Length: 121
Image 1: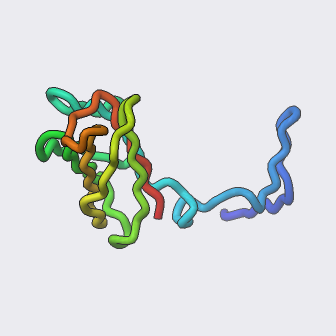
Image 2: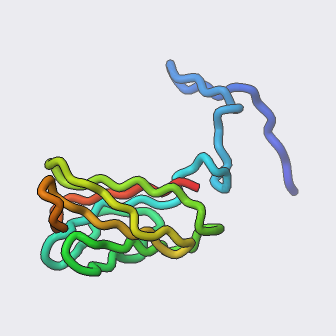
C-alpha cells in the first residue's frame, strides 16, 4: 500500500528544514560526481562518488571516468590541485569523463599529490 507524507517543515532539535529546500537527486542542482585523488606516481583515488577510475594520460594530465554516465556532455566540472599556484586547463567534458591538464607557475605540466574534482549538471 502506497502512502504519502506531506509536510512543510521538518524539525530535529534546533534544526528546522523547509521541505521546499529538499532537492531531488535527479535535479540539476545536485553534484553528479566528485573525487579526491593522488596524481603522483601510481594515481590513486582517496575517496569518490560516481567515479570508477582516474586515467593518468601523462604528466599533469588526468581523466576522471564516471561510473554512471551523465545525461549529456554539458556538465560543469571544477578541478583543484595542490597547494601551489597552478593553472587548471579543461581538456574535455563528455558524458563519460572530465579531462584536465595541470601546469605550474612556470607553465610546465606537473603531477600533483592532491587533485580534486566536483561535477555538476
